[in-house]
Image (tube, rainbow, N blue to C red; front, side, top):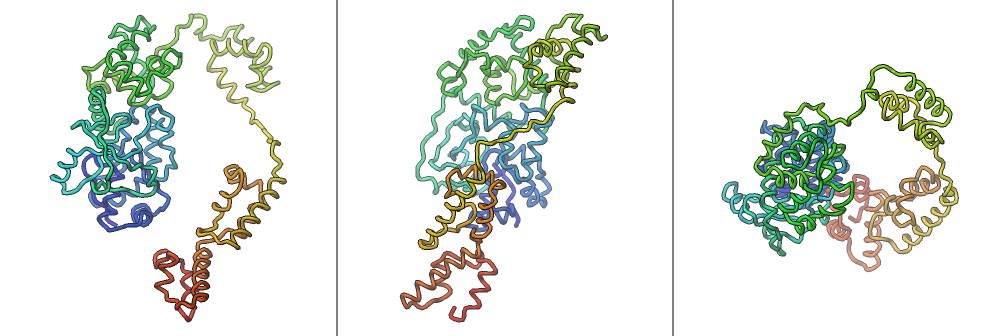
Amino acid sequence: MKLPAPHPNELIYSTVARAGVYFGLVSPKQLLDEVFADRKVIATLDLPSHLQSIAGLLTGTGQYDLETLVYKHTLFPLYAPFVPELLRQRAIKRMSDRADGAVHLMLGVAASRIKSVRTFRFCPLCMERQLHTYGEYYWQRGWFLPELPVCPEHGCLIDTSIHLDEHRHQFVPLNPAYFTTKTSSKYVANDLPLALAAAELLEQPVQQTPTFAQWTHFYHEIATECGCARGKQVDHEKILNLVCSRFGIRYLENKGLLQQSQGNSFWLRSIFRKHRKSFSFFEHLIVWQALVPALSVSEIFIKVRRYAPETVLKESQSGVDNAISISDECRMYRQRWEELVLLHGVKPARHQETGGSLYAWLYRHDRDWLLAFNEQQKRPLKTVNNRVDWHLRDRQLVRCLIKIHFLSENHPVHQRMSATWLLNQLPHKNSVAKKLHKLPLTQLFLVRYAESVTEYQLRRIAQFIVESREKHIEIKRWSLFRKVGLSDQRITPDTMRILDSLTYL
């Protein structure tokens, strides 16, 4: 299969959807087979997986390697600059093949206050240009900026009633005829400059990401330049007032950015402290627009990278604490901690009478040795969960399965009685699926009675033949296929062989 080349700023999702239109593939599963050779691929707008398959289909163009697809045709550049370099590389590697949702977890999207866009939307002015330039429509990535319901170029966006979760395995092409229900998206004036900055962020080239230390130094410096810091102390209240005066309290509340604003873990406080985690691109843009609006996104990255990667705002420590030579006092504390750990283990040692003070002293004065020693003394925790009698539960579940199977034989269900279907009929279905290794009788029942695809097809065929014979209706192969929902593409070889052996078909 030859995949159509992506248009500028076109999402991979859109390219695959257009391929389905080009080749007249009505079945979503058939499209997945042709493009990915995998029917379990989830249609993802922002951070898709299996990109190596796309790159392989575009090899003939000589223009689309893996990193080009990631940076030019996904929303990955919104998140990449703010995570550690090792995490960025791992995320690209996961996007190349089956990701199983790991990319959204690695980049912090799944747990972020700023959620991905889940509904389809488009800009009518951009669509006019697409039709004039390329003769067709496609989904642009600038329309799906999280928390920014605005086109960076034209402002207006149209929301549709189609939700991404309704089409889990289907790639929906952009066709105005599909969208009967359309409403103009509601955006405010503050959304547009943020969308422009996000669009510039999307255009950043492939490059190594700044370290947490560089981001820490950068934010401390802009706080000082804005008169919100003295030495190493940052006036967080003053920074909050600057951000609120720039965007307004109501706007920030609507975006969910003022929750727990007085708390110690408030994101705006944390971003001006030593960085120990990533922050959302939207939170970074809010601060940039409020404190350094004159700098473009490219200029900000140039400024951040000027700091040496190892530059860190270190805590002040006395000369005695940082002494290179090991004092007698330090040796004494080491020895006492070693005895305590060897007796109780690392974690329990901290809860002993003197363990907490020993740990605190060593952490402050001899941290490297403490962490190295504790790492060597780690003990695996053996936990035995006796809350559930798995033998009793195993017998109870098998009884339930026997009843379910008996009822399904007397009243045949219209779907395959697979192992998954049978498990879903049980109470505690999630725990049962995870603990099957503790349920040997249940496992044995599923192996014996779970219906294969061939068995399912033959059951439907047998039902049709019995009903037709009772009603004295002539049986023809084409009518059988249509009635039971089979086709030459979906029928298994074993089913076809049995059908061929029936002389009256």
